[in-house]
Image: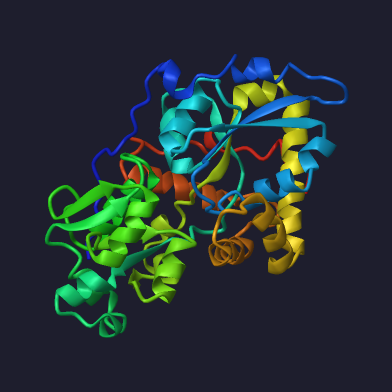
Length: 359
């Protein structure tokens, strides 16, 4: 297997967003000053509305348990759906906090924007590279036998213009998928198809074989393997052991507009105090206790889907919401290796823990 530094796969970062796409009634910094009573102000948080991935389990528990209100913080959730939209909203001062990867955020930092990872969400990424069993069967390959092959043997059948499902173009999933294709010996531009798809279409595609490969996160990777619709080409543990840069390319971390946080320090510290209380709740309580609250928040979602998310994310949450310097450096290294930034950035330009409660 070869490892090469990939060419640029970057997000477009226009200086302003179209009003119809991400306009707010007043910018986020103005919203933060509109306090009343005992409230310190409003924090505008970019969220995704169409699915429960659990990547923000600490935030979800902090909201559900009323920790933000107790700390004097009013929350305004603003739906951005994708990481590119979230990043653009952050750098345009339309939201104060958002959930996306540090490697994606680093592109904005490279361009002089003051956005930083401020609370860690994952110890390592929980994704795994899964393959459609229907597609394998169509190729004359027994999926159960495939699962026993070596990594090299499993990877050897994933080219020949196979369709690899990703998220938004230029985002973390596409860059990580391109990196893995390259690591397996394929040219990600010519040997495989990297196709941004909606989550529902990825799931359906894996089941019917129209999607052959997917770097999938919980709960989808676990549920599709358990149902027999997919097998793993690379498990989460194999990514940790064999492709650590990809395992360390964490998704949905808590990113803050640091200019806003510095100008509204008391409010920012109160936000992250409440956030940490949510993380403490996840660490200290059982899956069933967390599940009971999550079910109330996401009543329309399948219970087993939510349970899987809670189990995976409870195991994978950094208790103090902090990363080591080594973990941050690994994310910077992935941003360089995947072509999202040209040169490594200093850690203090992309990461801060100064708004979190003292250890």
